[in-house]
Image (cartoon, rainbow over all chains, first blue to last red; front, side, top):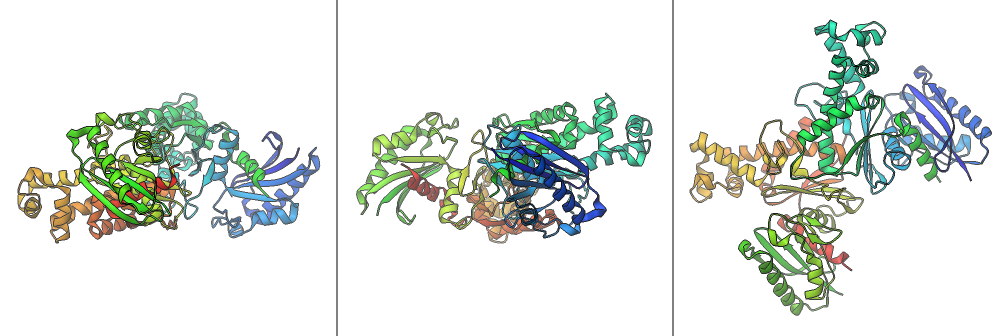
Length: 317
Length: 317
């Protein structure tokens, strides 16, 4: 019997945990990412938490897996994030190997999420799945024939940048009409803020849940207001769900995977999101094409990438 | 040294050929499909042509591969075409095995086309490709990690039914706005016929090449007129190419394959089609997502599925 260490390094939060070889969680520590601390600060957290977990483990710790919240050059096991300067080109797995004496594998959080759900969550028993993470942005990871499929340029699964709208909204990526511009935490928050300008009466509860400021309406507050029965908030989530369905139809037509697994913070809206997705899929479906691809929520909730890191650790040599 | 027999059974034409193990074509017979003859007539052609090729072969013929122009249940090696009644549920490979004494594998023409290009055409040296056949309808086949990927319901690669248009045109599949409604032989012919009603002067050359009748304007005539420099015809091809690009962006975002290979009759338009595709891909591309997926034409032209049948024969046991 051996244990493994799994880390989920995100832009806002991070988690480091001890798991057994069957993916059972033994201990998990989490913290808020101090962005100003940059790479060095984060490496220190990983180093200390990992050593502490190693010391507490009843069995030898034999490997480490990492879900990284940014682009990863998997072949060379390097972070390639340009958004946070310190990480660009950093060989994180080699660093773990050297500092912690553990073999290590890392991947980006979308692929890790797909792997986590495939091995330990909603994707158990499937051979292909598409994991869609609905967070501040929208990402995706593909499992095909039981393995992560990365594509030619490590860009497979860019669900967030599927063109779904003919309107001119410019995406963070520079293209127009991407799913991310109409169905993501940012898009939901922006829609709430736009509502506030036109219909201040309608956003009262959303504003209240966001701490009182119209400019600070968050996606989280909108999801919460919708869950309480606030109709305008539910309408915003509904609209996002319908756009998501449009993207999922393309996923189904191209890949017809066993399952599409929805994860990330926005997926916490649950039925309020899934009902309009299913409704729009039904409207868009073809009577002659009987796809049985299921659309389900991540079973591991926001921990899909962390469990993916466990799966990566189990593959690390 | 052994040879194999490959057959491409289509709704309008069929081909049966003798190939060596390296995929070199030795002899090919082709004919026009007599639809009224149904399944029995076609089986007779396959039987006689195959026997004749076996007799002419200098080396033992060890297997047969078939590209079938309709849906195929690959696991059970049965045609499942509902369009031509006699074929539905027919175990064609078992029939070949029994009648010709050869192990046989068959697949639908889109998958066979993908396999043909992968093994012997534009896809040599790649590990993933998407083959798009632009014919009367639009189909597609996926190669992922060197293998055909079929999806949960044998529906992976339904590129023709990617929703690309918000307009209400109803597709043969019953859904709305499918690629097939705006970029296919039928769509191109229909657009020519629509032009004829509004602007009879503009379609003069297309009508001439179609045998003089406005109602009979064909996609082939439009492609030919465009190739001669007829501007309205080139405009119709251009418009189809731009719609195609919209679908290909989704393919690139989801799969980021090594190559997208365009085959089928409409691809014979060559540069007239590919230029607007590349132009629209450039307009739609994201400055932040550097995909290097190439869009190229099938190297085997209309014979991609026949060469796929060769690849199937080489796998038949």
